[in-house]
Amino acid sequence: MQKDIFIGEVQSGHYDGQKIELKGWVNRSRGSKKIWFIVLRDSTGRIQCVAKKDTVGEDIFDALRGALIESSLIIRGIVNVDERSEGGHELVIESAEVVGPVNPESPFPITESAMENADGGETEFLLDNRHLYLRTGRMTQMLKIRSSVFGAIHSYFRDRDFTEYQAPCFVAGAVEGGSTLFEVPYFGRKAYLTQSWQLYAEAAMPALERLYTIAPSFRAEKSRTRRHLTEFWHAEMEIAWGGNSEVMQHGENLVRHISRTLIDERESELSNLGRDLDLIARYADNPYPRMRYDEAIETLQGMGVAVEWGQDLDYSKEKVLTQDFEVPHFLTHYPKIAKPFYHRPDPDDPKYVLCHDLLAPEGYGEIIGGGERTWSEKEILERIDEENTPREPYEFYIDVRRYGGVPHGGFGLGVDRVCSWLSGADHIREVIPFPRDSRRVTP
RNA sequence: GCCGUGUUAGCUUAGCUGGUGGAGCGGCGGACUGUUAAUCCGCAGGUCGCAGGUUCGAACCCUGCACACGGCGCCA
Image (cartoon, rainbow, N blue to C red):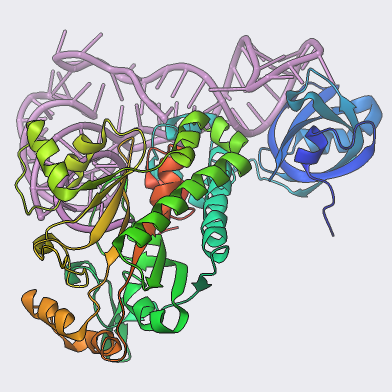
């Protein structure tokens, strides 16, 4: 079996007046004893199909009447241009067969009412039925947007001669705090699921010089927010001979490239989701301002927010800070005490590290964290000891610096967060097919 | 880990100060129609999250438990 014709092409007018065969699923149906309408859907759209009892005969007519929502069908007929039909085209059925019927005793459980409710968030029911929810219009659109975001990341890096490079998922040490590691049994020892590609990327940096990945990262955070998953997709890059500002420029260019790609490839999906395309164009066309941490603290203090120098900026403060931002903003030069050991202290003022976070507007928060790495053996040992981090799991990381260390840096971008922000989703779960959080690993 | 809200039919929900649980969608049957979230009539479908308690009487009040959702911290 083979499928040659897709509904989207029919609705574009490529088959007007022709006899064709469509394969798809019943989205909705209605009618009487003499005429029956089936709205057929496939991955590219929907089209109304009309069956008249006199034309198709009793057997086919009854079979179509019994095809409940989400039954799969093969339908043959003539394409008619008809304004009464959604999309301007319809198929006048000549023959049809039900391939995968749906049992009336267990009809498709996702109803209009359940879907309406999902517009404002995700119910337990829809999460439990995720395997079926995926085929609804909203999820299908989200998945297509997601695909374009992934494609845009690959094309950005590949067009600039970055090499895609893979790191292991089983690791021995933490990148961020150890409390958020997933521990897994490993032949009588303990291993952990990786939180980031970064440390292994730094090992390959002297070989490849410009490298990137898109891979899952795992963090055992019990976060219950619209921005967190325990398994999320992480786009990371690392460059040799690059400092904080070069890395930051790549981050800005990448996010702008993703925004532009969505406008080019997913205009209708974004519109259907109610997203304002002018907003996405603004994110694509304008530069992203940089602001030093100290400036941010002063701004916040000026707004009457209780915040002290040296604190990391939590989400509530990010939100206040970004509420008037029209485009993403970089925050740079955080205090050393607020960041992990691998961030390089600023030679001009070692109280600070050469780092940056990119904060998305509209309350979506941090989408990129990156910066320059501590690259000399002496400095990395000092920083590790300063933080009372054990050296053993990082031996390879330190060793890399003993052989021709060079200035380098990189960033990690939360791909799901970017999808969530650019699609205007209410929750990060909406943009990933099977979301994982602290309470859910099924379906 | 902390704070908040909730759990009523397959789904979405109404249910006032305690007095025999209603509706819409979906399903089934029928009527009608070039319908389009079709419409109209009818039928089936509920130990009101679980366990105790108060009461003549509990979906409703009390206690405990379970689960879910939202938010905070942490971060991408």
